[in-house]
Length: 225
Image (cartoon, rainbow, N blue to C red):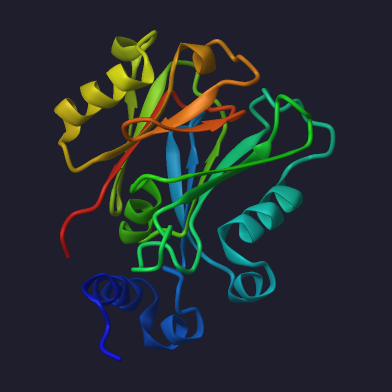
């Protein structure tokens, strides 16, 4: 059966990022993890572990493995030691129904244990098309910031001008500033004030409750390949 347009786009991404052999072994994955440290304002692109991809199912499985390995026991969920992971699965950005979703995994401030949420929108698909299976946010910026991902161009910007905005206002502001092709994930005043049951909003209103954010906004875009 011929590949669809989206599948051909993804195949080009796989070939560009990880080569023919690895792409065939990990079909359904871009093979890259983007790790962003907000404290030091640095980022690193890591290769996905092939054995982990086989052992742990999808983006949530890989996220669980990362958090279990990297988080120290007993950390405060609202401390800088916590991490939040945005992940995609093998069907993300394909023609499969519901494949545009993104999963968020973290230690929950509401329960103090495993936290997981799923949201629709095009955010997950855009992360995958930018070349990444997983985005790991770690560290805490001393000032409000937002993160911009445009393929391998990663930028962290001051966000003082949008502190106190609602998520709809932040989304509108960032789309006007960055371009309408960007997909936005944002927290509102509740998240800024560390309300335990605050939410991350994706696009024009898709919500995931109980998500503790470390950045004030996240924006991303995929350029045409």
